[in-house]
Image 1 (cartoon, rainbow, N blue to C red):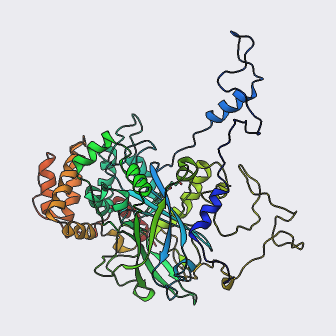
Image 2 (cartoon, protein in one colour):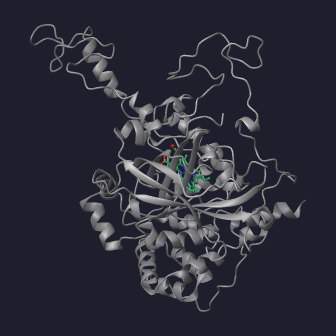
Image 3 (cartoon, rainbow, N blue to C red):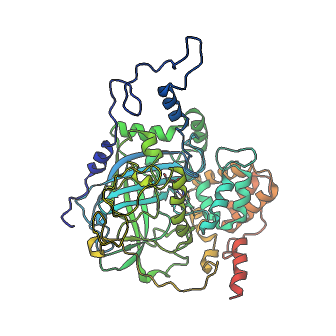
Length: 537
Ligand code: HEM
């Protein structure tokens, strides 16, 4: 097994090229039949009706009628690029993932950047979180790092994700507003869910209007695990650091660009790659030894918290270069299917309740978005590692499996794969003792919704603070309910009194009289409900 050729940057490219149809010199039907004429349908006489017999017309029109697939339920608007990842140093002390151990490998990658809220045809430069999803085509299978450009998330538990997304998408009765978070429903929701406050600070900051996809950081958000050959696990946060640095637009530029060039980020990425000015990102790790799990004043399982880089420095371990634009937007950028559950040996999950729910959601949505259970056979999704299993049939099946054996165990041996052991590169889940009551509580530190929001506010320069306050004026100034505006100001008063007063002054709300920045640990309504459950056990 060890003798297998190192993954080369070109191996995925060759795989994709096998699926690229050549341009011919003549037109054919889907059956390969040459077509003499495509400008007129077959009619009964010059002025007569079109005939059902016109198979070319029927085939062409039927295909057209079926050319749209559902857009992603979130992150519908995206732009992608091919490239490669290479490692600076052998990380085998931390992980057995081969692409993180062998510095001679060049692992092919496909990266899709996205906005979260807008439709497929929406503008690029809106105020929003950006997706930063990377598919590594490793020799051990595909590994997907499905991250965002902010290190924290709005909610702590996946069960709230449908509410969050319902609140931020255009309102159900009139499908407005389409752009930005300037939104009654959204501010109503987040005001009632104080755990979202830290992420809201990032969303109101310049991070939410990046200058370019080439100039954004990326974050895995959740705490994951690295596991080495001996089975020793450590906790890890993943980072992408752009070589060009992190830069934002200013709001006036963002708004004008959204009107004048809605494809601004897409064009920027495409043109940079065409010009040979390849975007580069360094992969960074924040590693926390297993014995330090409880060292922080927040829970590593809480996705609304990040690990300050002053506490655990980011170790840069490799670089990713994006050097090729996709050949076909639909086939690649649209049909690519990322999933945080696509892992390789040496990378494992934690019990972060947001991550655990994501592990269900992605494949569930892709089953409908990509038309059934065989979307892993779509060229952009196919691993470069061989696939052997007993899965058969289903819509859009492309593999022609030979032989009569499609079950395990069997006594024929024919065509049916045997199991591999861990030493042969099989994925073995980290053995972790889990023991507890069936409850809906979260650990106590999950109730501190504001400390890190304060940390973020304090980290900003004066100009960045001014931008953030202006953004709050713009967004909250459009909220029709004064009660919702006041609620947000009260939440901001938990973050920083001066900040709350400055926001209040711009949106017609009375400034809070006293600072309340130390009221950490205040429960959100949902947590209060769960606290009742706790009391009964
Ligand atoms: C896309 C669900 C949280 C990053 C998606 C999609 C779903 C989804 C259903 C569409 C996938 C598709 O159609 O292929 C969820 C749920 C979450 C959650 C249920 C929380 C419970 C997050 C978080 C991050 C994230 C915390 C970042 C760390 C992304 C990205 C995409 C995406 C980058 C776009 C992938 C692409 O470019 O195709 N998410 N998500 N999501 N999600 Fe999440």
